[in-house]
Length: 455
Image (tube, rainbow, N blue to C red):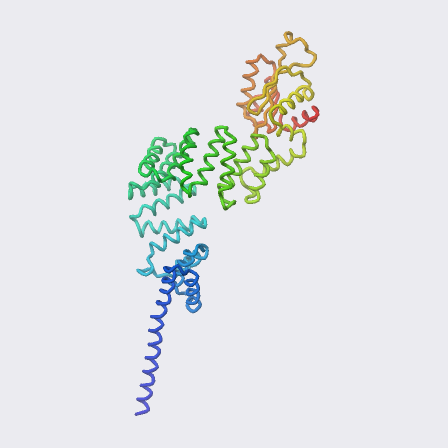
């Protein structure tokens, strides 16, 4: 009987011992987890991370330790590691007052945005529209992602909901304005943008949207002023510089455009972002218009190093690779001013066998009126006057250009027109020239003419 009682006492002692160990652990572990939080508040991020790793080595599924580890990485600007920790939390956490779901999902969505994972960010914002349904920012952020992914009609609904929740949400008004602009609802678009600026003149991102609308309306001077104001917003600075550059380019102010595209390229630490690639692309286009082909090629090669299939860059490089092997065509494309004028005269007199009478050079193209050689008396051969245009446009000549040549022929009383183009002609242009006294000399034939002229 005594021995039986001893056994019962021993069992009870062991049970109490195990219970004590469990209680001590259950108290100690949260305290150790809270220690990470305390170290973060003290700015001791490295120590916080070390403590977190120690806890997770023993308890790899402790989601609170993962959460505070993520917080510590965020505070230490190690965002990629923070995202990894937050992903683990998202899979295993039980949200409560110690781990509020709303604030956690906002942080997680922000991290997804930083690492250009819009679909994952959108999932979080959509959850937030249900869990924090009165917060206009959640609806605005959903709209922004749908907008960026090419679903403006869906974005419009989210922007409108954000405005219903917060009539003074300036970013939602501005973004809605741009969507309405793309939908050709001009008056409504302008009203939204103006309202956004009126609500917050110091929200400089709104001027970016105003600039986009003005640019779309071809009000380039006003658009440039709006984009310049948007420079003050760090998030929109690079985009605004790029947009102002395109306004200058469309207004044929190439030197100003080049300065802005250079500025956009040099102001970005990440040379792989979309805006930098477009800045290089437009910079190459400006150089191409100025016939600085070598500089264009440098920009196309820089783009290809990042993205081999960016727009028509591979075709451009291929085209100019062929031209680099042809000295005559290279001179035709790169000569400037008086040099190009002399080259065209040489082509007319030696390559085409005509006698140049009058030469005009303007806006990067050359116009020559000529007569057949041997017709020495100008007055007797006025009806045999021939009009020759030399063009160096980057894109194939449209039928509108051929029509302009024909109109000029009539104005000068010419019997024939010749259009020389290094880029060739579109199908409608070729069709228009059929059965008319018009000769279209494209790239291949132009190369032969240049060779014959000794260029």
